[in-house]
Length: 145
Image 1 (cartoon, rainbow, N blue to C red):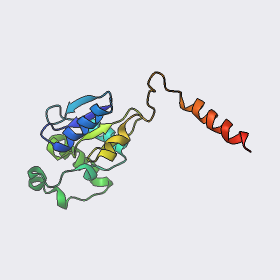
Image 2: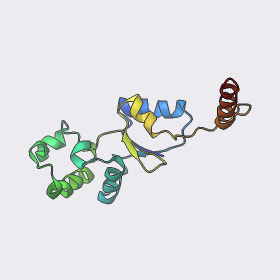
Image 3: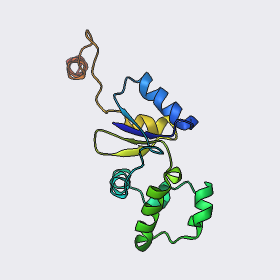
Image 4: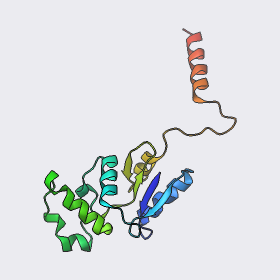
């Protein structure tokens, strides 16, 4: 799992705190310093299932200077948006978390961050696994059938 952050962003800090609290293993990418190449942005967009304009921070000064609010939002303009995100990484919405299952989320809410967490959790020693619990419940229920 990797998380793209801006350390000055409260949403990014909140996402990191939640990942830490959940014991998640992840790497941090400070994307303003380690700027993603266009191919990396395309790959993240694919994982997110979004278009570049969906993850563009249009309220940033660079967005106003570029005039992105007036840009077309269609397949023919996609590369223009991706180039802008790569050349002006402050326009990339944050935090972006790439999950181990090949998906990604924009982690602006606790719920979104939790979506990136691994689906299977390792059970602590001494806890029965879920299959034995299901068997116990099924056996008890069927005994009364």
